[in-house]
Length: 111
Image (cartoon, rainbow, N blue to C red; front, side, top):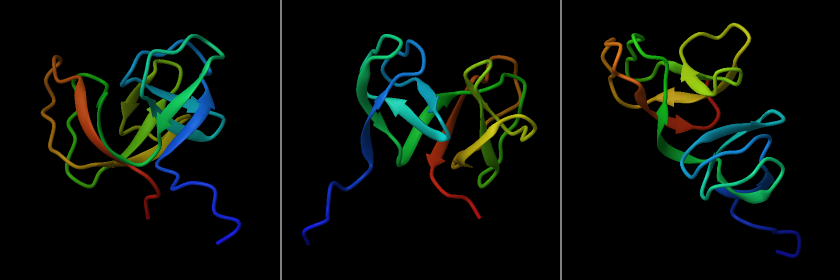
């Protein structure tokens, strides 16, 4: 196929702000997880498909299948849709404790 470019699970993108490996970032309307540490504006690989453990709002319970949004102001995941970008769904239950700040998210299109 002459027009095939790449599989697309990883994309080279310019970091919209400094990120560390494993940290999420919103690049325009595209959300990805940095594969390496990147300075603001530096280009690097971001995972845009798959399941990732990401920083979330503490004291917020998650259920499997819950829609997950990216809060770009605070740079963390949330179940709150207002002013945030839909990035995927929760694939593991997370308790609502203040210290429960990591959630497992499957990135991608959500129905």
